[in-house]
Length: 625
Image (cartoon, rainbow, N blue to C red; front, side, top):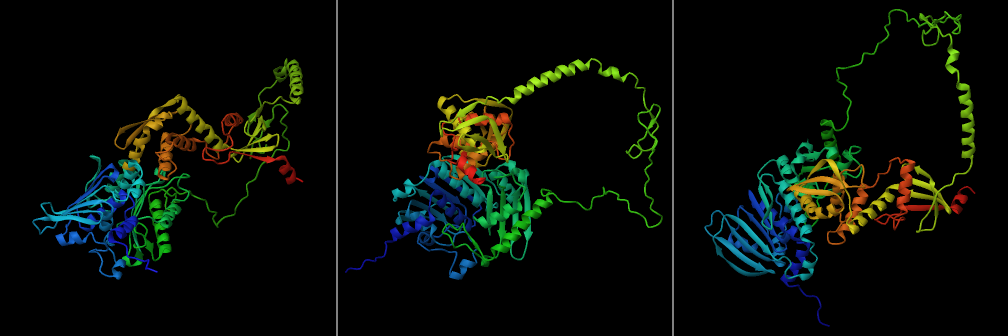
């Protein structure tokens, strides 16, 4: 039998490795930007076209490479960052695996131009699918310029899995923001399809956050700073009132490297406990400095997951640091024991005898005798107050003529009583869904969450929030179908500011939002104004609706490519529905009940959750049997 195991060709091995490092265009942007930072660049320019599918270009003014280094950089595991395994636990650079350029060159067409300061000419290399097509001297500026064209051109299956341009651009923007936030000492710019999205000059951390997220966040930032032998924590957190339902403004950096860490995120949320509205997330930009010996950044190919030696201690330090910052800025209520407006509390002296108060009572007082003085000492009717009763002669005339009225009123009351003793004729409603007969005159609310009513087969329970979700969803869908949506103009237009990521996403769906009666217009880049809300929505702001929709996009609940209007209808209905805990009047309950069972599918919410449940008569009998 012939041997079956063979070594893979380098080109195939590189493509397999590329699957770990290069997942999408954003991965290329991240790796190349990190290489530019390691080259001590002070200016980095990122240019992409068609969301990076056709072109990704990174230009820096770093140290550059010699012709030999330029060629070696495209070999697998070729790096200048480490020499031995122990170096992995003392990393101070971003890239160190030596796989980025090799993986990118395996799945794209790559051009490299680079020159060092002590060379008159640079090097120009062209590689496609791991094959070097040319290498020659070239005149270029100091630094490195890399052009990546036609990503996944030789792996059509991988290219088909790329998402829409808006989605891929969002991922690129996210990676750009993460690298730029950690390095405010570097000039950055991002250009997409010849449109400049970001121009970030050198600045400090606070200014960099403001440039990336938006000016509105500057007044909402609270500084955090703590130093311990184990860890140093600096950065900013957002005020609780600025918390949003949409995620995306939460950033952890360790030794200037972005990381995702759910365990530390929980520490932040615990510090904000009882300060945030339900379902919202605070913004935070936290920079952790630790000894490289106590972390491992080599547990994930993208280096975004980092393992700490003593996570539990860091968790407590992080949570305490945030609580301290919130307390210093009067976000957490505290008792001030040093106030000068103290209350003087009398203290009994030791000298002298304590005399018990005496209440004077006049036992001869008769309130019905003329000429008597009323007594009010101590509020008990004792003692003389000196108040003389007024002349009350002729008081009987006040009630003259009322005897006949009382008699007539009694007869009328008897008639009404007789009428009320008769059983009322109650209106009924039959649901086509389950054939149950409902009594619309007897609705009760339980725990401000459920509506109860008696039906032929037992006791019906209705989830009031899900019921309104279903009602609003079908209203939105009907408005789209008939194109008869109504818009209620707002008295004061609501102005919203979004970062580049959220702004680009909202720009794509603004026409769809207008179709629902939510009148939104883009005033300028990143600034949107709400002029009107759907006519049947009450007690909800347009900002809450839009935040919820953006949050659903980011969590994957809405896909721009599939039934976008239906998905937006679901999201808007969910955000606009009455919250749990709201007390409803009998009129409101009856209206909700009637409108629910006029829906095409009253039993389930738009997301498929149960709205109506019936406890059968047999089960009720069994409970009391």
